[in-house]
Length: 638
Image (cartoon, rainbow, N blue to C red; front, side):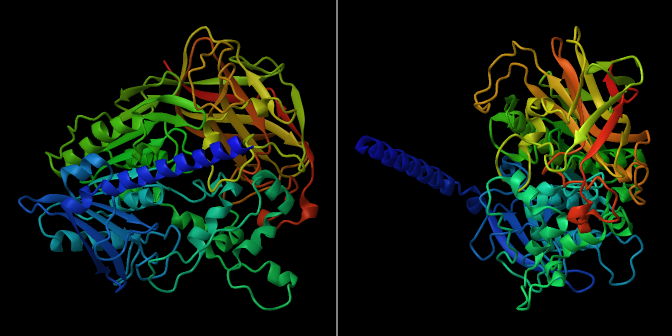
């Protein structure tokens, strides 16, 4: 026992010493403090609101520099004289080359004045003194180029996730000084990004709601919101025990009233974002007005764009892909490129050498090479260089997640892509020809939904599941499996995937989930030292792409409708783009299911007008049917 205690003590001591060493090493990095001067200023917008802005300018004033700007709802901290970020700019190369770097708290967040609106709607024809995020960006750039010394008149914007959205916003009705913008993992429309997927609520984002929906009435340099305390390490069981979504309202009551706990009080909602979600279950004018991808026809050709997306981004995959495609569609004369790499949310900005997503390894130095060879080259060309379309970068720089190699194309999807239908045939077969029309039934048990992960955990937002081994799901009776024979040739998908399901249900409502899986051979090499202990690469079921459609929205996201019980019905689900080669010796597998918990909330499986207000009695176990004339339309690279 004494030896065990001694070993435990030594382990803790060594861990503490290691952490201390790392902290000291981090503290030694004084490049920003040595080479930049920091200034904080409140820039006045056209309606009088003051937006807190932090400006890092090079101490070397012998030449002029472009301005790189990020607008964020996540704070431009650290605040206060003498307090500086350890890292600035999109990457270390752009930091060390020296640029003027600007961070701004957007309207209503942290030290900025005004009222925050989650994905504030763009106002096309503004009246005098009327503001939105587009005008706030314009006014900020206008002030910067006129007032910051030693700037060369060229501005670039960048950001990941929500700041990526503001980078997209900067391109709309852009200021003439804006020459380059890089929206990265950018939110495009909140009915399809982050909190919703095709009308289904991403229950796994539950704890992130208060981050965006807690009111703030004055500038502050410290957090005014708090996250729900779940008191459980088992997220699946936590949400199962909570039951209907309306039972979560209590977590969004921030100023508890000293009154009897009446039914009315139980349903009170103080969080404005949660209230918005609850009161607007359909794709109505509220959600439509907040989307930015609807306005990409207003991106002038004077702004070069480089859209960056992670092929396994669980949070924002719809947004960047639709941003790239939208600019491409409307801006025929625009310089517009896509970088599509083997990353989860924002991993391209990290400095790790080994590139993993969850259990799956894609190679070394992928993010580092992107930063040095692509991102830095893009901004330097348009902010310091010629600024013409001959940047030396490809139109589409995309990573084949099966072959694990980069490819360059002059269009995305590539021009030599053809559409092929593969059918969900009987006997668990995925075939290139329709064999017959049969019914395959399964029971969707509302008390035992299909988990999205076999891990017992709680997460703030999910990431790892995007490459998780899907064997645990394939072996459940409520997950239908269809797969090819072992491939005798490579089979490459490049572009989106359309699941054309023909289904029926004994109920009047259902969700439909489709997953595309790469089944590895039995003799797959074990070259992955970060694989979870219970897994093997032998027969690994790599999830390549997945998506859900809330069945009520099969014909319209604006006008939901119930299923007619037992009636054969078409349900089409678009799965976002992939670039993946199923290698010779592998198999292509399709999984179809109706629950995916608690990634998405439970569908009652009986139709109600608003699932966020459904009662326990509305939830019913149903039998679902998939017909074997259902097909998957692949975009196949020839």
